[in-house]
Image (cartoon, rainbow, N blue to C red; front, side):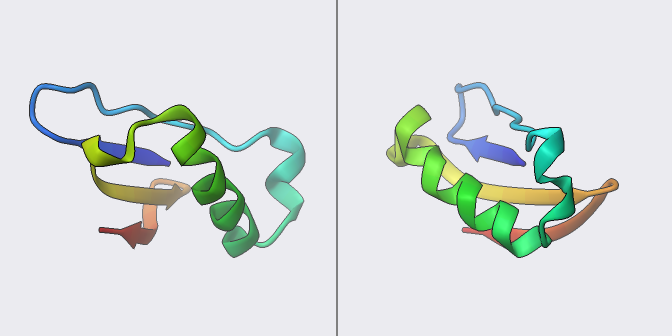
Length: 61
């Protein structure tokens, strides 16, 4: 998951734990979306993108 932030802020990258790999992608995405507000100020976030094997699979604007 990549979080694209407003200009001047670093774009953090998050990875799902290896034990989560057996779950469907949408379940991993839902879990990560719930955790984002705990680690980032949401007013800095422009776009959240989820990738699987290098391909964009989900985007939240």
